[in-house]
Length: 237
Length: 237
Image (cartoon, rainbow over all chains, first blue to last red):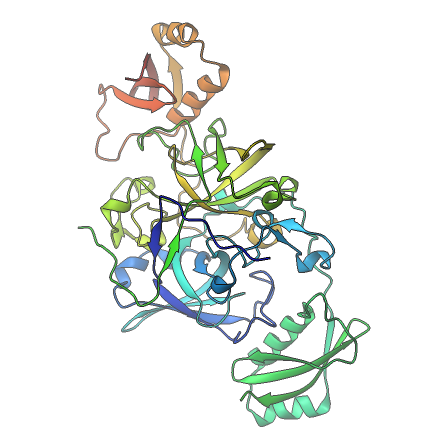
């Protein structure tokens, strides 16, 4: 049941101020919230019209808000009720009580760590802890203001940190890691991503081999008894 | 120097999911950040197509993100450099290093306290601590997830809490408060708003009587030696 958005008398056009380039080439495997996979490094390239002036002072901040468009789900419309994966898919929540990508204006919001600003021909913001698909269009960036936005004691129906799975690598997978000259950040990215259990709620079969596309490689893995085994790596085609 | 936004090949239409109704009838006097004026109660009426299903589970959260459009400044375009009022107007910061309303896509983001949900013919969300102009169009609502979004130790170039001014009421102003049957929330709203010093950076003349339009009344006040005097109240015409 998907909905389009009834016409309203008021509307505005929004456009990308830039795009994010991230290791996540497909929805499967994307961290379910920002910050859960610190090894998920990415960068945002601002469009040429946004010069160094536009980010003056931003490097004083540790975290930035990225407002973006869930571009991969725009065509699907939106749904009033969602089954959040954190709740095991058993309970339905309203779209405005979730961070589901299937929402009326397809606007997303992620808090990411600002690692560095590169002042080249165009402005590049290096960030980490992203939960964003590669080539996501960014529509705004704002500094994080802790005395206004940090409410550590706020009630929240989310289960706190989900229990992490243990991840181990098969011998062939470790050999492929070396063969492809993948660095320790890639190793951490795989470990942190798989520890979150990226399986969809309705596909939690043991024995099944899942494939997660990270950068230019496919990571093959299997989950049994809450243990993840990285079975192998191969070049994505 | 105001800029319009160069055409991009990608763009999206966004529409209000509802509107906020707040005491702030004009920009002058609006709290400069959410949460600074807890007595600023407001409500968001969702459009009829967003039924109770859409907010199922939202009442488990203390805080919600309101994504909105700075509708009053859309016509002004955007500016690469801003003089934030917190810095006394002396220093310029980049638009993406501020929460200025004069930004490329005119998108705003406020964390507000969710007080109550009213399930009537349309869904009404009662909120507090708002920094939003009356009739601001809301384009999304999301729950606040503290274990992802509360970073109390994050660096931030903002001065922490600005020093609050002392507020006192003249005898005529107190009599008008009674005459107009204004309740203690209105009294608190005036006190909390004025304690923040709403004067624009370049108009800090002593002696000048400022007028702030809150709900249906004009609040007249004067600031001398960091003391605010509420001089009088009158019906706004």
